[in-house]
Structures are given as structure tokens and as C-alpha cells.
Length: 167
Image (cartoon, rainbow, N blue to C red):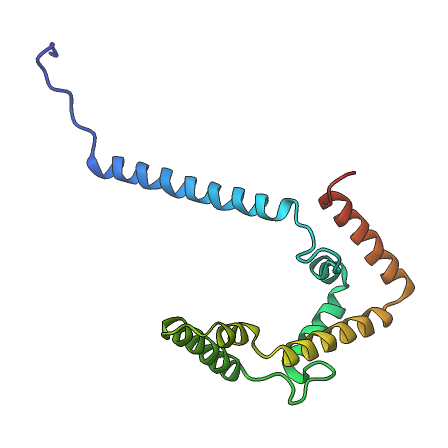
């Protein structure tokens, strides 16, 4: 017999918590996916007037990508003096630069010229590495068959037509 004064049975508390947690996880995943789509949907080259290397890379045949990865990892690019530094060396260099920047930010009086120099980093080494990477990339493309280059061009046209704004 149930009447107006009969209490309704309480729902298990664990079930409510599980449902709320499930809803939160679903909303988080939807947010991550939507953010990724929005981030990459209209991507233009990072620097106006420069080639879109990300698209060029994706359009390369898999074997050429693998060759370039191996060269970067194992031998370095043309112009690298000592080849690619180890992970530990790169990390140590990064930590040293970061420590210098923090010290300069804390220094009184603030030395703007030293701070600017610290932000510049080793531009010559970076320029050599980028030049070597461009050379290695061009060498790989030159080694492609005409059909592979045509496929690469078609892929780039499709990618760029979808992402660049219409005039």
C-alpha cells in the first residue's frame, strides 16, 4: 500500500555518481574533439609567405617520410656539424637557456639587451639545421618518381583548397 505519506525508495548513490562521472567524461571528450577540429580546420602556414611544410610532409610518400625521420634521428641533416645531439644534450641545452631566462627576469636592474640575446638562442645552429632539413627534403622529393610527385601535387592542391580562404 502506498499512500501520500509513504517514502519513495532512494536511488543508489553510487549509480548517481557513476552517471555524473560518465557525463563529465563524455563532455570532456566532446570538448577535446571539437577543439582539435577547430584548431586544424582552417590552418594556414605558420609564417605568411613561407611554404606549408606540414602539408608538404603529409603529402610525401611514406617511405620518403621514414627516410627523412631516420636521417634526422641517426645521421643529422647536411650542415649539421656533429650530427643530431642526443636527447640528453638537447634537454641540457634547453634547461640552461631556461635557467638563464629565469635569472635574467629576476635580476635587478633588468638587462633588456641580455634578455633579448637569451631569447635569440643559437640562431646559427638553428639556421644550419633548417637549411639542412630543407636540402634533405628537396633531395627526397627529387628522388620520387614522376607519378609520386604528381600524386604529391594533387594531395597538396586538395589540402590547400580545403584550408585556405577563398577570395
